[in-house]
Length: 379
Image (cartoon, rainbow, N blue to C red; front, top):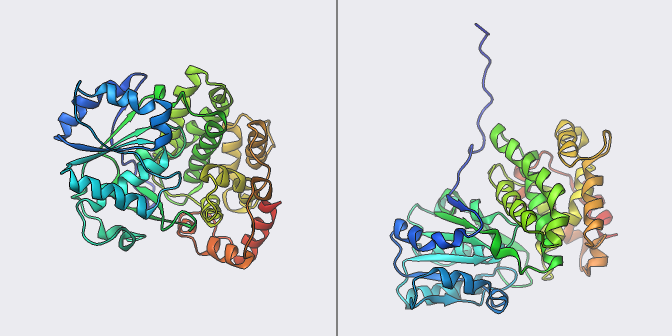
């Protein structure tokens, strides 16, 4: 018999997932799934872009003919406290008993916050960074992603801005994971090329940072590597609106957030740069190469495994693979090119250094290291 070995401590959940329906046409399962959850009068959250593009019509068509749907369609591009409070007011006014979030990460994160506040006292900011305050009595939430990027449909966190031009805050905890995720790649076909690229690289950033994060989760690590493979194999084709590629990118997006280990410096930087209304997915993927180039001493073997998953030639660095993919997709080369205007460099550095994402990062960069990274990212 082989000698027994001490097991490493489990510092993160193995997998914590909602019930998932994943297929072309999966939206047709919505009525049956609502019955399964016991939800009779849901509040549908979405945004006006999805209404205009006809995406929400596909969701409406899946519901019983003549059903009187309660719809809030004013979720902003970056989720805000005001947006959640307006949705919550309609939820209460119409006597709703569940939330269905139809959209990208902003809509789904707003849906998580609305579901929490539907059953919890006080105001949303009182729950920022306080998972212990969120109990199990969260209103039932169904997440229906229309982008392949955030993976919020399976995650235990939600990013929320106090105002449209403030840096992101967040709520998190096991009870805000949606009860159900309906992942229908058909709903992503109207997404413009530049957003397909940006959200796809956001999915990559989640896979990369979940894989590198502290914690023991071998199953989650394997899933994260598969997400990385899918992004590099299929994202350029998804930008060209290839049907099969849309399937693989929705799978990659979901996989990337399954490990539940946490994120890292790339997201700390994206939140620090998130005070000027720029797209989160683009911010984080522009930050990643500079971060990864400084992690060889802290996660060298994992960086090599990621480079292999990306299909890079032996000896090439994962940071180079991401930078080249950004260029291939037509994303900006740096923050200045993207339109970010530095107001206070010291504040940027301090904000990134103090971010909660550093708690799960493989290395907490010093103030000097963050300054160096930020100056590189700015260009």
